[in-house]
Length: 322
Image (cartoon, rainbow, N blue to C red; front, side, top):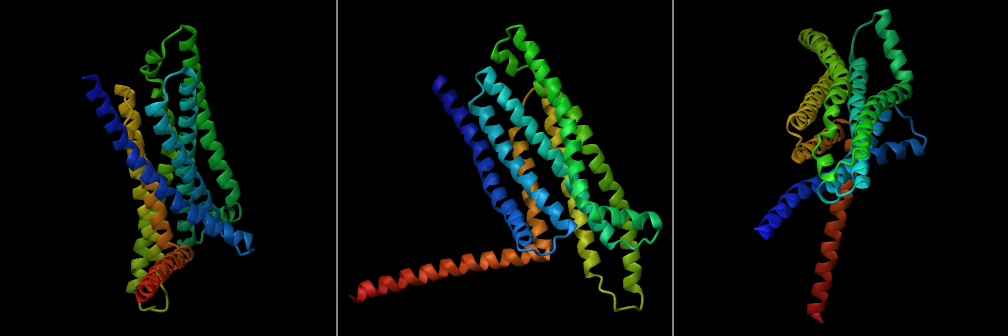
């Protein structure tokens, strides 16, 4: 019975680790591609737009979050046997939360920048906000990082204080691992993701008004206006809003389930890893520069594979001829 139970546990671990590793590999390829293209342009002295800054920061935060989440799942399954490993797990978990909050804020900032680029308002306040965000994008990225850090540090201090108090009373590791240490994460996660989601809702409301205005422009007799850019940006902002809503709901469901049952739903963590990969893939598809570079990379890979196949076939023919 013990052997069969142990085999079942190993199978369950593999069922979680296999998709986690697939998500890790896919995410590293997609996110590193985005970072590499933008960093190469910056290195060559080409102009870097505010969107490039945000997209590059998004790629870095998502790639790091993916690595830390995979490490968290691995440690949670195999190495939770001592106080040191438990504290290590706690630190890795909060680094992942920090990167997730940063991802949320940066995604919100990216949608706001896109909305400001295509909006047609001409009020003094709107023009001031548009210019301020365009020229101080780096400061807004830094503010997103600082806000995420502040939220995570407060929650981390509460949890680490709880763990130290438990250790003072000589609680065993088994009781410590079953004591629902991460229940405070529900509150920090709600606070850390609520305001970016609120900004998304506001930008979506303005997006509907912009869509109404664009429809009027399309119906008018002025056919010299190219509306493809408007529709493309509106589709991207809408897709980003759907992505962030799903990301928020999945993360909140994980925290809520842990809060009531003290059980970590690892498959939901994998879903939280896959969603940014899908969003980054869509970002590559909708961005002309990234799409062009991806086409070149894929074409190079295809040419290399066909050239290698042709070389092997030719060598085989020559061997047969001899």
